[in-house]
Image 1 (tube, protein in one colour):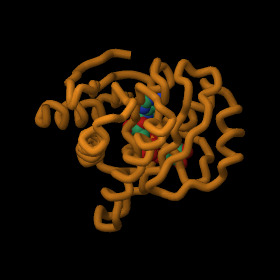
Image 2 (cartoon, rainbow, N blue to C red):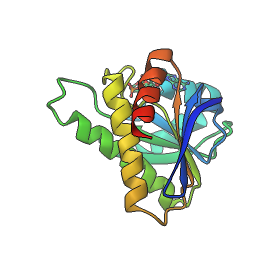
Image 3 (tube, rainbow, N blue to C red):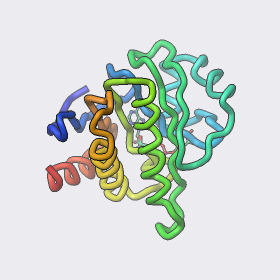
Image 4 (cartoon, rainbow, N blue to C red):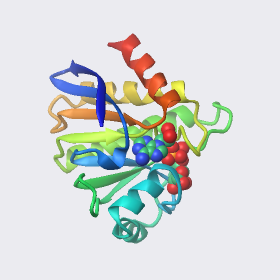
Length: 182
Ligand code: AR6
């Protein structure tokens, strides 16, 4: 996968990457999951197809994960060590707590990675696919939440936070947001 942009923030690295998250060589990749952890399409489908059905089986043992939170499983045959299943909101009208739920899903994922003492984590554009969240707004929330987490947790084990974007429009939204901020 190709690193397009990077910055140092509070002694940590934040990167914008173009490519397939299942190929990310990090401690944990984040899955854009639903509350039942039934990994059908999108990133979730790709993760189970490439990582193996063991990821679905481990997810089934967890069962239900409410929107705005996250849970962790192994990563099967993927290069990553773990998959953190983050449940973002389904986009409704932007006035139904979608922003807060997306922020909370990202923050929970980072907290789990920190608790597991992981060093690197890669996020897809949670909610910005099948769940219909506007891409620019997703980019803003994901990047802002990463920054907020690093500010609030200066002693975190996390050294690198990556945003791995697959399609061109989503990649552009992240590049724009990142370039205005850093
Ligand atoms: N690597 C990185 N990003 C990807 C990949 C990939 N291999 N494949 C797709 N994307 P989505 P959501 C991008 O729909 O909106 C599933 O059925 C995609 O272009 O995966 O949170 C789950 O089980 C988009 O920008 O997640 C849930 O039911 C982004 O990943 C539901 O979809 C997120 O798209 C979750 O929907």
